[in-house]
Image 1: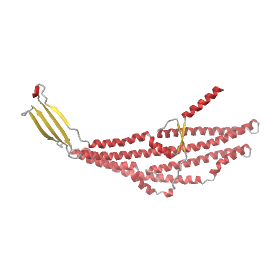
Image 2: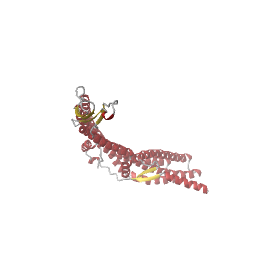
Image 3: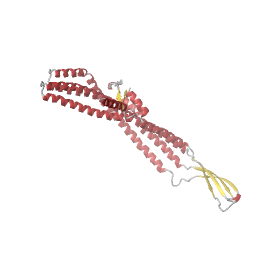
Image 4: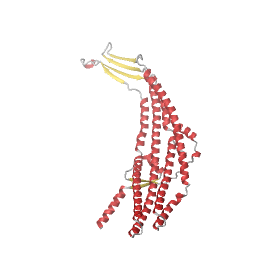
Length: 409
């Protein structure tokens, strides 16, 4: 007996140690996500990489030193050799132009990071909405399970006394098995959402996240101007801004490629010892390539074509953006109207009380088994429909905010 008690105690302790439950509001979850998501932290480092590229573009070319004409046959102080130091100088300010290209590249990197954040944030919020729905739906079916277990226990006693037929007892048992199967399926879906959320938050696998109710006030579609949303999205959506900046990038690239068509000049100083008429000769020189065969025309033409391509992508992106916002706004409007109608349904507030009443009436044989089963089906389907309408409202509102590129106040 003592041994069994110890086993039970250690099993309970081990389970408690493994599963650590934390209750968080959606805003707390999002704060953790922004602080702890490893993918965001890694991608954010691209901004530092872009800063390094800008700094590198401004750096001068290294001077070059060469030692030639070493006479291996001579010896002593009169050994023959020559030393030359050269430095290349750009006459077209190509380093400054390349730095301008890299600066636009940095701005694009920031916009790409913001777009990644936008996508991951909507994924996080959708996962929170799904988890919240599953939590509440689990409460509904577990409540139903509790009343069915009570009814089955009561009917089993009456069946053993021969007061109720076997068919009705089996009907109740079948209904209980169906609810327990639904609980198992819901738990599997709940675990899947837990995994998604824990991956986004980069927290320990043993943690169980419970979503607490947050003050979610959804604005009425009547207070939202879809045209204003489009105007906001055109200037705030990071993916749209990234495409627009890409045009600026190619304009700077054209300027840079034209600067490469202008040859660089090399200045040099040479010291020659015992290599000519004078024993110690010091001379200076200037050199530059002659742009006869390669004047960088193809690179310039490539950048010009890319600019034209991107201008078409900008126009197409703006049209796609407008269509996305109109679709999201219409979906949100429809979902909001459906949710509002469900919210005003007076039967919702009475369902839980009626569940207890119906179970007591069944035990007292004031209602038939058919009536009880019909009510149980109606109870679950009505609760499920309302919870789904709540979840869908959250998802559609997040999709609308995602389409706009910022939160709608």
